[in-house]
Structure formats: C-alpha cells, structure tokens
Image (cartoon, rainbow, N blue to C red; front, side):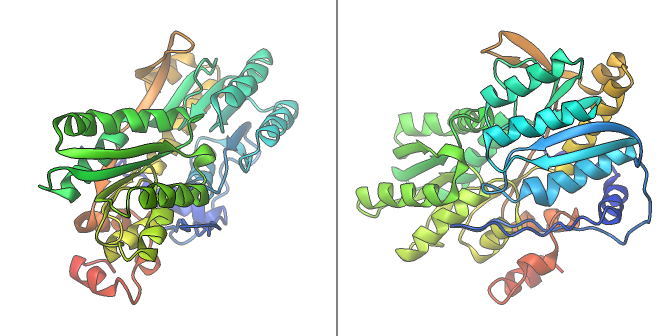
Length: 381
C-alpha cells in the first residue's frame, strides 16, 4: 500500500543540502514537533538560478514541522531541478500575511503559484487574484473548496484517515467497548475533513456495533497543539480519566495528548495515533507513548508539484495533464480538479526504520537514552 520509491531521493537530498537548507526545526508549544533531514553532502549545483520565477506559499509552522523542515527544502530542490527560480514563503498562520505574500509574488512576475492554504476562503481569494493576472495556480497538499486553482497535488487524505483508524483498532485489539476520544484537525482545513471521513470508514462501524465507544470528537482550530492538549484533558477528566484510544490527527496533536496522558500516568497505556512521521512522533512510537503515525513521502509531493509547475510555466497544459492523471471532486465548487494523489504509509514501531532508511529523519534524532534499546532491536542506526 506504500508509495513507490521514485529513485530520486538522493539527488533531491543533495540539492537540498546544496541550497543550504537545514531540515531541523523545533516547534514551540505543547507536544513539540520537529523534523530532521537526511541531506547528503552538497553537490555544489545551482540549477534553477535565474530560471522562471515560481511563487510558493506555505501555511504555518505551529501545527507541524513538516512545512519548513520537509516541504520547503524539498520544493526548493525539486523546482530548481525543473530549471525554475522558487520564492518560498511561510504565512505563519496569518491570513492577511498569506494574501500580502501572494500580492508580492504576483507583482514580482511569477509565472506559476503553488499554495498550501490556511483556509479554503483565503486560498481561493489568492488563486482568483493570480488567475486574473493569467498565472496558473496549484493547490498544494490542501484543496481549496469552491476554488479556482488549476491543479491539486497531495496524498490520498481519506486513505491517511483510514490508516489512522486501522492503526487505532490494531493497537486496541480485542477490548470490547474500548473508549475512544477523537482530536481532529482544523475545521477550516479540507484535509482535516478528509482525514476524519477516512477514519470513520473504519471506526463508525465499530462504534455502531459497540466494539468501540466514542466519548467525544473535537476539531481543533488552526491545528493548535496547545489547545488540542487542553481540550483533550478536559474531555478526559470529564470522562472520569478513562480512555483506551485517542485519534490524534497529526503528530503535533499526538505529542500534546501524550503530555497530558503522562500527567495522569497513562502514557504508554493508551493507543494514540498520529500523522507526518516527524522525529518527535517516531521517538514517541519507539518509547511506546504513541502507537502509530502516517508517513507521507513529501519528496514525491514536492516533485509532482514541481513537474506541474514546470509544464505550466511553459504553457504546456497537455504535459501538466500528463502529470495530474487523477481527479478530486470539489463539492462546494461543483467541479472536478485535476490531481496527483500519492499513497501514504502506516508506520508502527516495527516499521519506523522505513522512515530513517528513506532519509526523512536521522537515527540520531530519534535514538536517545529512552529509545536506544528499541533502535538497537530494530536496526535503526
């Protein structure tokens, strides 16, 4: 079920290193969420310098380390490999900044825009401005509902949710009536809705049959880890301190939840899901505090977006259509959006090595005094 290795990892990672972009990012707040890199020695290349300008806007850094730790350097490397000159900025969760960054990129003469929006409304407004200037727009990772973007590149996000549901059921095992709390992502993020929908394909039949008992499901505005932890604690205490499994929509929320569970002596006793295969999430899995995460090889997402951008910059819509061979329904806009949907992978303790072997996280970032025995046992080094 995992995504196929493109064989281009070493080349892109060398390009990342050549660009001088570190993959280590510490995110403040409850349940820190860091991303580390597997960059190889710099190749000294500078392809893409002086090429066609492309603007990229990423959403924030608070919810996940992936945006600056993985997406930014991998998009930079992939776009330069396509002969483009990328301007990659992060809106830091600020809708006005997202809009201002877009205005600046449009004024600077970018030929293509790639946007990972904070919300569908904000992303759609930016896409409309770009389209009015004849600039094609790619929705990256998050589809803007009711939007006008030409293409969409992401992972199969309902599948991500289904893997989270499967991981939760697998971790809980045969425990009839096990109590579950769901801590979901931002209600303004269509991906969070897709994750939830995917989870429910697995969990709803279990709830209806009484095999699992849903205590409460709560979305978290802006994917705020600290709010997620506080909300979870309120639900937990309101349920008499009882919980058997927690659906955490990503590793950042999972980290905040594990912090609360540790406060009550429940960490390692409750099944917790996650997503993004961050260093903190993987370390928590090795410790036994988190049961699973979802690995999304972002290099593949970045490369697909770069191929689309390269074709669109040349006006080659046939070439772009050859990359985006799938489609996603936008129910709000009542349209089908040409898409690239990549395959996510379920990661539990026994498969953490897949992520380190792929170079997304270094063994040194997840193997420490608490986890070294597990690393040795699993051959992570």
